[in-house]
Structures are given as C-alpha cells and as structure tokens.
Image 1: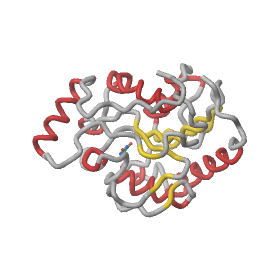
Image 2: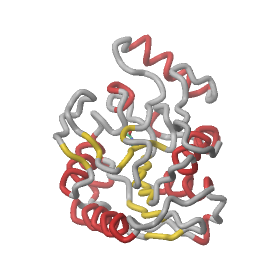
Image 3: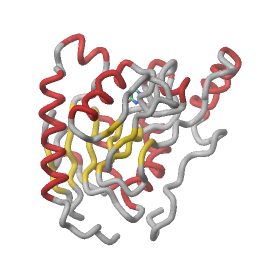
Image 4: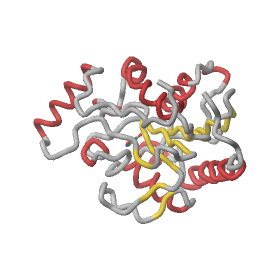
Length: 226
Ligand code: URA
C-alpha cells in the first residue's frame, strides 16, 4: 500500500472486513443511533513526523465521538500529556469539536473499529494492519512511531517485517528500525494501567520527553524513501 504522496487510506464507514466487529457496530448503531459507530479515522496531519498508535476505540469514547481517544479515559491521559510536551495546542474537551490540534503529530489505532470488551482478536489486528501500514509507509513517512501498549508495538513491528523477539516490548524502549524509523514504546495509558500504578503520569511524561528529543534529533533528516 506504500505510494508517493497520496492520502493515507482510511477504512470506509461500513468496512466489512471483520465480521465480529461489523456485528458489534450494527448492534451499537441500533442502541445508540446518534453515535459515530464506524471505523475511527486517524487524527492529525498526514505529514506529521510523529505517529501515535493506540489499541482500538473505546465503545463510549472514540466509537461515540469519532476521534481517536476522544471521550475515552485514555484520552484524559494522552491529550493533556501531548499539550504539556508541545505536541498539541488548544484545549482538550473530550469532544471532536474542541480546539485541540496535534502539532507535527498524528493519532491512530492498531484496530479502527471498537472491539467487544476492548479486546480485538489476532485476526482482527492483522486484518486492520494494512491501514496502519499506510500510516507508516506512505510518503512522507513519520520519523517516529509511539506505540501505546504491546498490541500496537507488535503491529508496528509487523508492518516493518521485523522479528518481534529482536525488539521486545518494554515501557520506555526506543528502537531504530532498519529503514531509520524510530519505534518508541509505552505502556498503554488505560484506566487499568493508571489505577494499578503500572503506568504513572511521570512515566508517561518520560516517554513523551524521549519522543520530543528524538523529534529534535531527527528533524534534519530527509524523509526516508520506501
Ligand atoms: N481510545 C482509543 O481511541 N484508543 C485506545 O487505544 C484507547 C482508547
């Protein structure tokens, strides 16, 4: 799916690829006809240097509002962190018509449709990967991918054809992949991880600081050719 300067492909509203997710979408449309209830498109400049990869929309958050992380608990952690680190401007109000604007940063998910119980299957993650591949490989490519959680981490590695065991998932790890793209990994900023203390605001800030450093270090680099 890599190409020259074309838009990054987004799944259509009625994407038919994952039968279980389609059934869940239709049920959600019946229950909540005013919600977005469709694949959630990426948010931010398609030419941004930084791509943040989450897991999947939350049912009453991004699946309702139509913008990644927006209305989800994880968005209450992610967006203020982006604002603190100069990776967004404006203000986050948990609605798609707030004035939040990512700065040289784009936000997407490994799986674009809401999965039941927030748990996509391996097959659904693989089926949705071509859309992630587009985000990572269509020119101009992001220089840095920040993965939130292991599923996003592994899915990014698979896009690049990397062996997972060569790049183990660790909070705060940063790896330079063969084509020069950096992969920075963080625990997911989920309610569970924050409530259990697996991830703290300080730990998340440290990852954001590393991302900002890398953005500075790589800013002179030409965009890498496919
Ligand atoms: N909402 C999203 O859009 N993605 C996540 O990973 C979590 C919540």
